[in-house]
Length: 388
Image 1 (tube, one colour):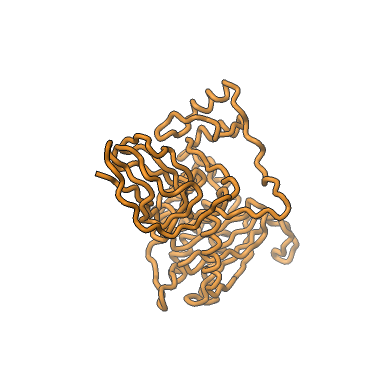
Image 2: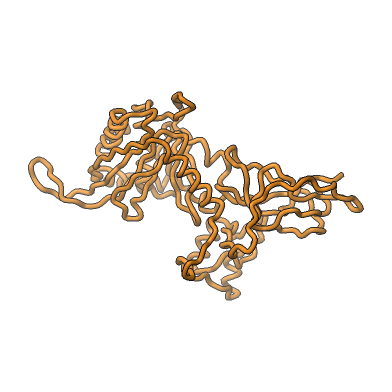
């Protein structure tokens, strides 16, 4: 019996996606569970497995085509079987004669990636022998021993004057969602924080957390812990706008804006208020690694109730982030920089950090936002209070 290959729905918000490449050609035999196609949604890449064994037939869409979810894109037939008569074609945004697509990030273990970086090896040239073609440490070492090619330095490719380059699916969706989000009446509040005790606390806890988890504690981990506690103290901030009403959340699931090639993704640390600092550090490290490998599951990148965007590592002093719908607020974190400040009537040099809270003015007002920021500031300047 003919089995249709259906373009899957990878998350609730997904309406379409793109064909990246077929791993099998029309007429090839495929086995049940064998990967036959690579797809791309606005959030992640995905490998589609054959639901049954047979012969891949009647491929209807090619790499670069955008396909609505639920669309039949091919059939798997048994020998001698004919494919059903094609139905009326669905609307597809053609992308003929588009420039070559940037190479997709390959599947590789974290250790394999570290070794590849150390040896400046282009992983796209390495053949993976792990499950599903995943590149292992041994694959990279063997490639290096055989004198494999190294990667070119990471840089923005040279562009011709006036060249037009199509957006990736991720960039298109980011653009659309930012337009939708910016229709929300944003209101911004900024506070300056003395980060001296925050830095000191991190240094004191670094060896403790690392010995327990093998993960280096970051300032972001401390900020997540502090924000989660501040949301407990200010539950009105942990909400969203819902068709003329306000939806309040008891759970505190914090999204962390993470940069990836071609855009941004937001992995979610679930129930951050119930996690220890060690658990937060471990969850953050695992999620960020999976994000950069485009290996997040739908559950790991949806459903946050509040988001943090930290650009301190890029030497950004202060910025205003755009709220991620349907959340009601997002916290933008700048770098820690030494500044001359007044303390007890004297001028001293202190490490200072700026925090900017963007709030949805439909459901929150300045007073609520200010109270939340003051709680965050208090915990950052007196982090030992987290233990109380």
